[in-house]
Figure 1 (cartoon, rainbow, N blue to C red):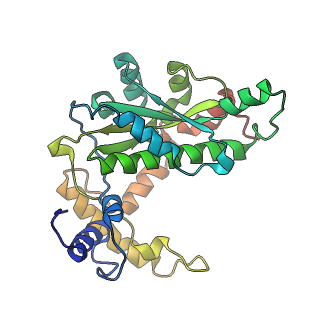
Figure 2: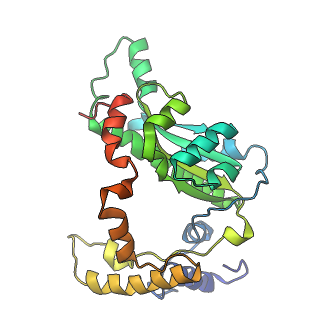
Length: 279
């Protein structure tokens, strides 16, 4: 997006990149924060140049400013800098080399262990900890915190990409990072300056009418909208020399066979072994 574009033009460009031509530009609120959000893209190639001193600390401050259920703060984050550990994490994540090359790599952790230690120190049994809701709250808290960090990073001119593939082997990741019982890795996050050739472009998303419902869930027009989106995503894929897949093909390829989970089909038992009973 051109920084000197007037707001209406900037909005039109951003909406065209994200959706095509809808929603109609010029009819929606707009500011610099929304512009930054609309320009998000995942980046998988990083320069070795480190961000300025204090960047990590301000990103974590932004992360801790996210909402947290009942202020329980059931998440933690670990910066990983050890080259040998980064190599293992990249291996777990199917060889994603940007884990090794990015200057900041974070692992976000669903962490009930801190609250459990608090309960023991105070002589209180926290009966809710073994239940699925506690793990879900911790995972959601971690995700919201990470997204705050992403927004902050991008506002500073940095790029990011989430690494969900750490869940391919949460046991190995937890052992590598020496996590206590009741703490489990839910995803990683690469942060750094994008290589010019890796900056890419905004990936189109499903039309709003497919995901936005009013008072009741409706599938009216979904098939037609999906067909239109398939064409857009296929064109995007061709431009970036990836396999020219449609969204329909992508969903089927990723969800039709269990082997697409790359070990994550055993994740429930793995998290139970890490101290999450998931009752």
